[in-house]
Length: 400
Length: 59
Ligand code: SF4
Image 1 (cartoon, each protein chain N blue to C red):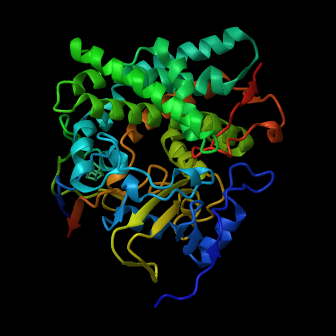
Image 2: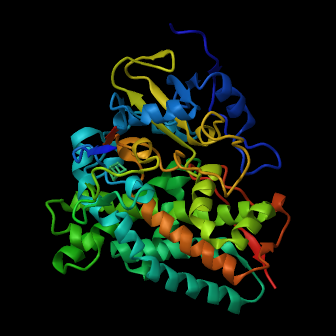
Image 3: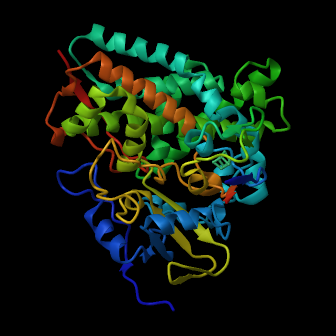
């Protein structure tokens, strides 16, 4: 039953020239014929790469595939140094399976429900207005990343978790290297230690004097200080860089597709659908991986116990079998079912928070600056190709 | 259609509430799904979109 399939010696990551939003062309060609192929991982592991939408979803939903850290092989270059990972630290639940994972997740899901996140809209609006005011005061141009895309999610996640916002610069700087697989190992380690220490102290302070925020509330559960520190680490890391890059890269994509921007300007009610489409089209968290716990037959192939399957979210989200004319940004399409928040029991916990922030922030930005445009040629925008979260390092914009 | 949800499987991602807000809600305490309507006419893609396969619909 196992037929011969192509064998890649590395994960294609190079975006086509002049199309910063498109996945590597190679991935598309591959997916349409072989949605599951062999891949040599940077650490030398011989595993698989899933590029088809159906297959990626199937792997993510199947408990025979593990998310456990000690079984992990990362497909990203630069991750080679991280062979022989230890088991996840207590609380690092995204790298756990089954009951262990569920126990942590259940303590958090109630804090990120659709209803609770929508109640935050008003606060997100205040914050957005403040930053838009500041941009306007500053003149007729700005870097959208530092003026808008980063500070809004940073402030929101800080408030929600109960991290003093005055400290946000410190942890912004220490979260960043963690998402750059090419950053020197010492730099990453220093960042992990600095953040861990900071958060541990914060948890101790909250234990001494409980506060009315997520971390404060969690100190009243059975979680230990160590577990709480890891959870704070996870939520902070996940909430900052992702939404920031969706806001900046999303704006870039809209500015490069004036017809789609016009649709949204004419009918701002389309924002919810447009956000799903931007999530699909941009797929900023572009890769993931799972490891087979037993032999699994999938997509006509036999994945053996211990073999890793890398998942290309960006290829899956451009699968023509799922999304007709997938390479077209179309804010009117139904993009539901995209894999940008993952699938299965690990599907993004903070996705409703991300949606609320994007809705308010994009709406506010477009309403405030009807003449928003790039301030430099598109080719000069520095793309984050070296990160496991795709995006832009800067987005110079101008208005009148 | 008749709906059933498996609260043990549910991971509280809220896709169901987004898709069919009149049919599904999330528990304020633990974020897990609650059925507001066991016999709705329309639930869109909610079954398909649930990341944890926690929703089943039968005719
Ligand atoms: S979509 Fe599924 S996992 Fe998410 S809240 Fe609804 S039932 Fe639970």
